[in-house]
Image 1 (tube, protein in one colour):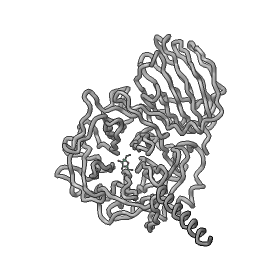
Image 2 (cartoon, helix red, strand yellow):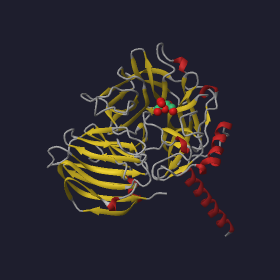
Image 3 (cartoon, protein in one colour):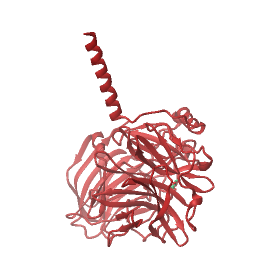
Image 4 (cartoon, protein in one colour):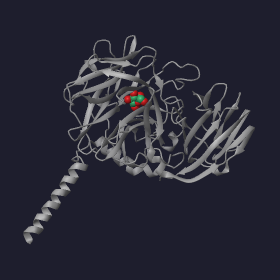
Length: 515
Ligand code: FRU
């Protein structure tokens, strides 16, 4: 009898161990530097002093301090991990750390310890952007080690919380081929193909701006330069934050070109933009071949979207997240001790070589208090939608533009007696427009997304979160993202039509309640 109990006990223990090893990678706590523990302590001691003004409720913010690019977006140890460029100490860009939050559903984020801080001679200026990869049960972070030059470096972790940097650089900026810049050499995307490791980074050489590639047999190197996979000479800066994802057997090269030439209304209005190109990366010729008759496509037509990163989840979804700002936007929350947010994670699908973006489906679990209005036709008028009031919500509707010969039809949001933000279809420009000319503390212009109606209709899904707008047009054919820093009482919503007549249908609103 005793023997049987012991046997069952061992079997049970064995089962527990087996389960633990399936669901979790081995978690080993590594010693962290003073710079990392100091940052963690600073956050604990000071985060409660940050006022709630303008802070998002269902978009990722840092607890305190400045954030920019998403980094190391990955699924590891049973959760999704997002690292980000982070200066915990001030609401402005500074010595870059990697902050870290994790989530099980892309909407509710848990704060994790700071992963990286500038604590080596080779990254004394900052741990700049990069990506993550899982290998041999460990998660590796490849990042730009900025010192008097830019280099690529690697850190690893067992379990994904505490990280150890390699003693030596992965790619020393001094080892670049003749003529290539080591002051503009950054943002490694690391990936594995056919048992080899590859890193692509932005760089410039006389005459051109390149995305350059390196390869190695082992993750920790040595890496050798293998070629320039994509080049252009019409940027003022470099391609920042390259990324690569394979959807439907096509490679999609993603990057954030600095100072790409705009075309007056419709493309590249933010100075630094974000683009993708559909094609195929050959690791034999070390070139990216775009599909014929395609060129760069802009990811988002709004004001506030930069440095996106993608993740292929184990359930085969392609998720994108971006910094919900751009370098050209003024910092309106520095005085509150923080600045920056991430966009809603977005699911990508490729149709006819075009990337559609949809809000991650888990957001539907947080939609509450449904309100609707009957279809309404408006001619040169404005009506208030009292039931749609609010600033943490999803509002959706379609505009039947069949009867529009000219004019504008759309919605006013974040509205009080002195300010408002407009989103509308402009018949003459055949575009959806965000007008932020009178939006509160930001009043700086318009953005256009030129788009065809589908069966005579323009469909808009709009997410509001205290200080932001994300607009998904025609099921995510285009998106437009914008920060809006309006007064607290600017929560009114109206529909309007100018110089025309238009019908609004399927009007729906939900509150979004997460925290
Ligand atoms: C893009 C970027 C990256 C760099 C990081 C520094 O926003 O300029 O190229 O690694 O920010 O924070």
